[in-house]
Image 1 (cartoon, rainbow, N blue to C red):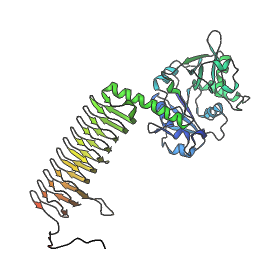
Image 2: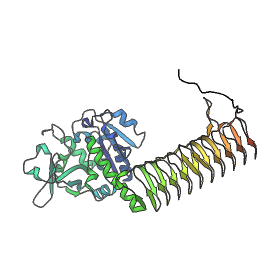
Image 3: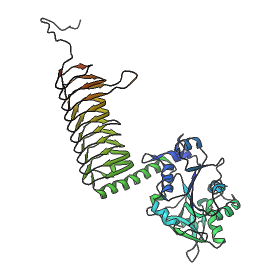
Image 4: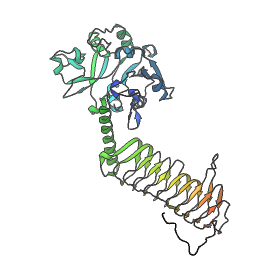
Length: 454
């Protein structure tokens, strides 16, 4: 079969977005719309992806450092036909060409695969959709034999044509050889004064080609974004699909409308996910995981049986079996929690490896730390890992007990079963089984009176 080339139109300004950010870079599910389209093109096995850019071209290119994308400049926005024509020099004559749009981000791989499956030199493939209120869309004009004859744009449509419910999505596929023959002959004699890509439908019919029509599995797949209202509608539809997938795969959601997936999320069975939970990046959740309300989990691996209590933030961390986190805990990148560990309320960790059964229950900061098994870190403990220029490591052996309100000044090592008295500032290593106390001597002053207001 001839190679598939994808042309993505992404040159428009998007003035109705009221934004300095190019429209195609506005995100759906945390990812720019254009990146969604490019990822889908990759999934289709496209030999080459040609992205036509114009407005904000530097920002668009900078958003994706990928040599697999061929950037094509459209210096003047003269219509969709003109935009596709800019890519013609880069299209092999024998290629099948699929035209997509950078502001139509959620067309599924299945829909597009079905569309291009039987494409060859004898036909043109067109994606349409039926709309109850089609105002503003190009209408699909068919003959009495129900064969597609042309597409007429809203501003050029007669009153009778405006009653047609089947509309053009803009997405089509045709051979490069035909495109190279037809696009140079397009006319801009229309209400918009633009070169319409849709005019090639009538050309295909005139040349005896068949027009193969298919429709998406869901109309939201072909919804474009012209303003922030439409962007929000698409976001909510996408998130509903994610919520339904999670429930199908084994998660119970307190409210399917209040869970957001902004990346790739894989799950086990028998999960409970409360409201206002956000997943970002690549996240994996094991079975029997419980997640409380208001949590944010990004680029993390959560093992079986983990409980994450309300309003905890986890990023770049690995959490072991049956660990307990939060509420109001923050695990920063490089955190590795072993099995049966506890990281409690208002605890922050960073680059901390916490051994099996160890506990950091409240109000502590543990960073750049290697912690053994069954360590207990008391409330208010801080690992002082930064000297103003460099980071240093704290090492705690198995069974260490750190009393509350202690400061461990790295680099420092606490030996197996070492004990740190509450309120200590530890600046030197502590050997196995030693007790270290480093605090000022208490003085009790008799007869002292508090100051009084004048």
